[in-house]
Image (cartoon, rainbow, N blue to C red; front, side):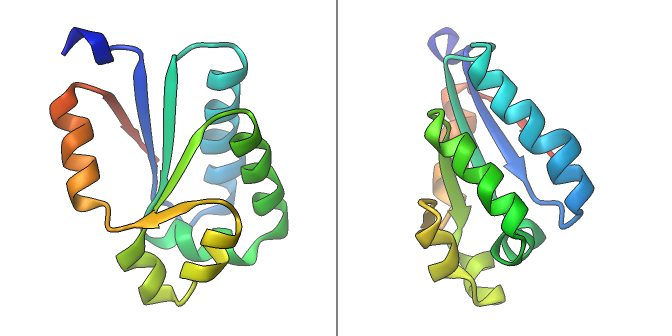
Length: 115
């Protein structure tokens, strides 16, 4: 598991816009820009799927995060429940069922943080 010590998975589930702007996105982007982690994956899960689909400022910010090399994934079940699967896909987010991938990330020994 030591080989994955510099791999980070960020689970963003909060539907709170301030949490997205003042914590999740800021930390995610800076982690990539300043090389705090070698590999970063941001997972959009739960109410955050709906928030992202409707907020243009957050969409612009997520594009900047993606353009800087952060992998973006979203929970398909959640996106389907909110009816936003296509919107998230259009943002360049890999929308898929996340149970197995998240379990694999944990078993690989990646660091996981949630917001």
